[in-house]
Image 1 (cartoon, one colour):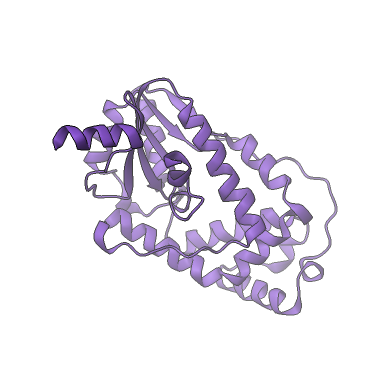
Image 2: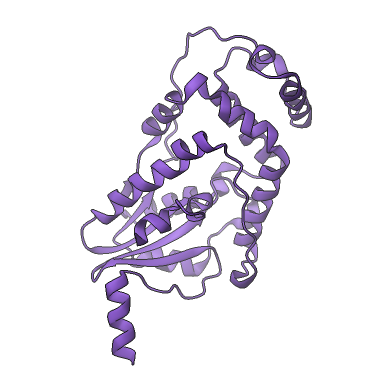
Length: 266
């Protein structure tokens, strides 16, 4: 029976992950290509440092660390934008603009400062500032800590896309990313709850009592920022040379029908 189960695993190219003290899953793409995929949160709290010994041991044994992008680089990935944009109030409906004003008040930001920015950048600033108001900081993010740990070991670092490609993706969004801004406003409270849920996973992970994260993207935005990226990442991971890898991607990429895990298992 044991041999039959092992053959079944080989045929499906997956392994059932043991219980880890953080959100993660093990997937075997071939006999000698194994991935330890971690559901990262890009900003964290002070008590999320240091990382779990279990995860650090996984990294020690890995041939390389794979991340979405090397976020430890100091330069800003955002291009110098000399375009002229209409005031935020003109881009939104009355209800959306009222939500925008409420968000700005909550995070102590002047609404006027956003009038000169593209909508996608406004969305990112709102989301990042919301996370900071909840006590999260970038240097406590899981992928940031993993990258620093890998650098300390001179461990190879592989980027799935890199910051420049991420910015290009945002620049490709229709209407300068207006839908992303609208999603951020409409799902403001849900995004805050999701952040708190993911923090809880890293502080006290209960694999049998895991809350499902809501989808707070409209269909078009989800297709560009989630589904298509998951498909691209899956192809890159499947093309890796044999070895053991730790893969850190945002936790949202591990859920849903078009998740990274779903593409890898297809």
